[in-house]
Length: 159
Image (cartoon, rainbow, N blue to C red; front, top):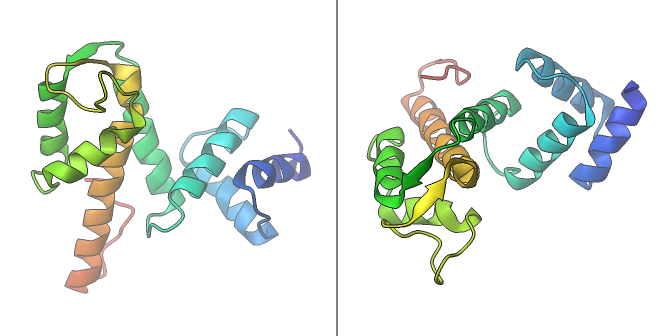
């Protein structure tokens, strides 16, 4: 895919134009994350940037969170709701409030009028956006912690 076509494709899906400088930074983030520049990845990045436009997370952090969620989905397992809830609590180091965790489930299709039920069986691929939201939450908490401490830490560290 040619550079100018790729940029136009991104702008169509991002629903806004970007500068050449921003485009080259975006391409560098893709390459550094191990993703090639193709239509699927460009559309993914446009979607991630549009949905998380008000976060202080870098694009590399967003890509990392999405890749972690996809690894969970690749396992093709079915998990009970209470197990998923406990895993999300562990992932957020017990800092996410119950309401926050339940909000993450709004991307899952409703069943019997509920997004989350502790007795429901969830497919791993249904949980990709849920775990991606949890990873974003953890990364936001880390970046807030670093900025509050005033210590010159590297917010690209994924611990």
